[in-house]
Image (cartoon, rainbow, N blue to C red; front, side, top):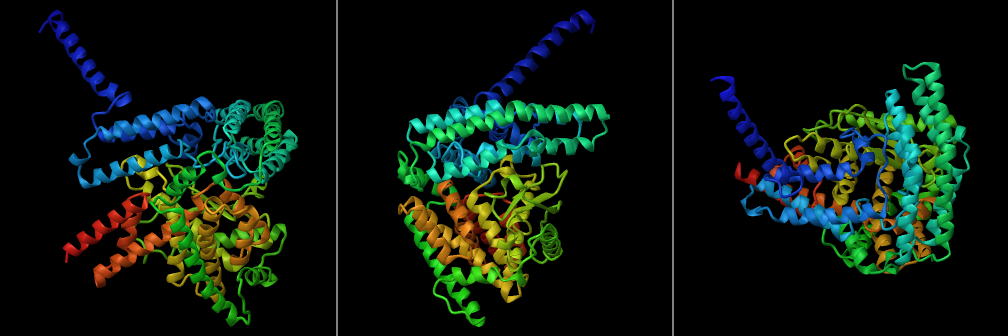
Length: 603
């Protein structure tokens, strides 16, 4: 065909292709995508793209690595509107026409979006614009020094751009906090004072002593750059800390002083507008269940009683008779024979001790799991600037590309509060076979929609980690009686959380009542009892997920064992629980019951 005659055909073909592309692309981006899987992908992409900091943490869609998240009031409104629109779009799909696996994905997304909506679109689950745990004053330096990768000059320049953007970010948080205050939402006075002290300590550091500056200089030193380029980047870091970051912290401190004038020491969210509904929504989110505050409170009392009885038996074998188990447990934990020396060398020994525990159990999990992570865990110390308010241990997963291992951050600031016999349980919870196994195994299930590889449900995530402690104890990894005591006191803490969280937010306990309960019924040192209580006051419902989630997993395991008898395979049970990704408890129950039904049918 001559070229002139082919030209109209080519134009027609291109026009049809463009039209077809538009028919596919327009609804995928703006309307109802043709495929529900494309809707899932779009929803996940939207959530990721609204947070360049999460993208950097995951090493995914990280093309805005020079930007911080948008903390503004306008962004809060946009997120809530997006959640409402996504729920509407999801419900326009015919769930009944989907297969069982796709119906499960539909229900997971439905639960997630509705939960966000009931908590007013707060992805973090936090009640306040800032708090001592997750406020920007701790989140920003933590992100810059642990999540923002510096492997090139452009990475270093992006880091500097993020420091330069900190002023705007703090001003956005300040505006949100003032808007909240106008509606009667102000953190408790004791929280404001804790945040102020931490922010002031950071703001008072000169640039050359600031962790943000030091981190950049250390990372740049390892790059293949000229001395002049390294000096320029270091000087820029000092300048940005002095002219932007420290003044931003000072404005933040001024806000706290302003808010404190109208703050009270009431610890529970019952004091807030619509407080009862807020707490039930937070409890629903934290436990990923339909449990009421009354049910959670009674569950906690029963579990505390059960665990204390076993603790008393172990203490009695050591010649200690106790009504309240807290004081003798703390006394035992202070025995020098169970502690590392409170020196720099002792802290190094504790880090090495944690690593040895993790490396040891990693080689002993074949009998318990078929599917295992393809990346390991490294132990590091919690940075000094956040050690005062950080928990004893915290896990940070590897990026999606597994370019570095998962990290277990151990809080070694107060080395005298962590006896050696409690270390195994903490390592099993945070690392192997706890958070590390749960998070990484989910990410390895490439047949799942990507959102299910990444989505967190608190009761599942923390329930699995608490179950991991139980699993280790059941399989002889804590054979020493004192290691058993370490396991029991960790379980007891999680049981007490059910009582204290509901006590604060439902029964209207004071901060002091909650601290007293923690002191009498757990091994937490006085300072940790305060930290725990103040954590619950700003993060309602979250701490309840541990025990609620573990008890549900144990219930499902024993139900499966009873129905399958000798055919029950613990490794297959773990595969079933972990390979589905994080799930709300009712959906996990459905998955396990379906596996049992299939297994019964295979007899």
